[in-house]
Structure formats: C-alpha cells, structure tokens
Length: 211
Image (cartoon, rainbow, N blue to C red; front, side, top):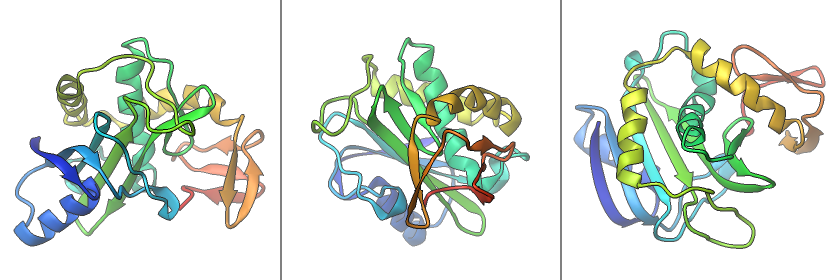
C-alpha cells in the first residue's frame, strides 16, 4: 500500500478521489493526514478533527477485495478489521452498526465507503486525542505508522467476509442499546435482526446503511 502523508487537508477522502481522478489509478493507495478541516462523515455529516488523530483514506481495486464481500457492508468489513487489531491491544472500543467506533457511550470515530465502477474508497477517522466533550478518545496509546502497517497487512490478505463478519456478529450486541435514524424516523436497534450480508431487519425493513 502506497502511503501519501499530508500535514493538513480538508478531507482525506476528497483529496484521494481528486488525486485518482487527476492521475489515474496505478496501485492501492492511502492518504494519511495529521489534521483535516472538512472530513466526510456518513449521512452528510462533517467529521473534522484536531492534530494527532488517526485520519486516513485508501483506495483499492474492487477485484482485490474478498469475493464474498457484500459491497454495501464494506464499512463493517474495514471497521471490524481495525477494531479487532485494537481489541487485541486491550482497547475496549466497539462498533455501533454499521460504521461508528464507540467507547462506552461516546463516539470516537467512524468510517465511510464509496465505489466507482472498479474502485472502492474507504475513509476512517479515529480520535486518539480529545476533540470536544461530545466525542470520546481511544483508551490505549498507539503508534499511527505501526498501526497502519499492521492494518494494511491484514487488508491485503483479503480475509473472507464470512470470517470478519463472525467477529462483527459478536459486536452487534452493543448496537442493541442504540437508536438509529432511518428515513427521518428514529428506530431502536433492540429488536433489530442482523442478516448475514451485514444488513439489518428492522420493523419489516431491510437496511444496509444510514446514509
């Protein structure tokens, strides 16, 4: 994975998409920033951060993803890989379906994915230092360079969706304590059923994401 390091950027994901549009895609690539001012969050939200947090986006060819990966659930796949690495380092963070990192009752990060005809883009943000009272901070210290190296080594192994999803299935119990906004209405996840493709069944609706 080629890594492009930036001091400050409006959004790692916007920068990466514009870079690929201008220069074309030659190899899997990651944009890592010390700080971003206008990060892309899910559901049209902005995810900005202070210097020192984990802020990166990467692009891979869709043909280099696991064959059984449901693209609609790619955020679950990529967040679960990172969560599993951090859990093995003794962090207690968990994933709120489908793409948010939480610690206790505070959001500490999240991910967003998008696809083109043959590429998949993924952006991830995780608070390593405090940004505000509203958001939490990762409960362990990590070295960003070492963490990214470990993360992309696993991503490049193309571990099956089935294997990664088995980890997320255990994670899903945490989501039961939350509500989500679907089509402008709040729904409790307490009775939601997690399907094998990463979607949930909630009040007779099958939902893949909250965008």
